Length: 119
Image: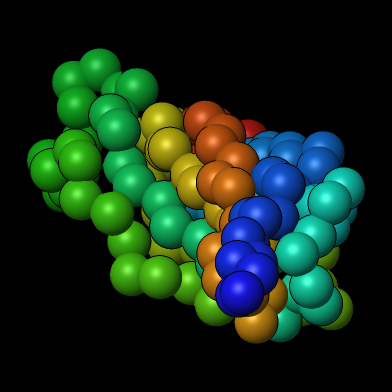
């Protein structure tokens, strides 16, 4: 008789916070998942532009809905800064932990970059 072992995915990262670091960057911080299905090898993140808050909207704003490339973040780091973003723009972010057993649950956040000159 064979015993089936079911892999349970890690829970979401804890305490996900995103804040405007400058007018074109966001600082993202988090803590490891409360329940992990093994040693966290790395964190993975994607983000996408939602809309520009300017009036009128910036001419160089990207089309909404396109996700960034996959960003790999070392397992020992619990902070990253997203740079080269658009002024006063709304972003949708997703982050998850990956272990040898696979991907954990996705944590989601929304944030807006600051207006020009603001911190």
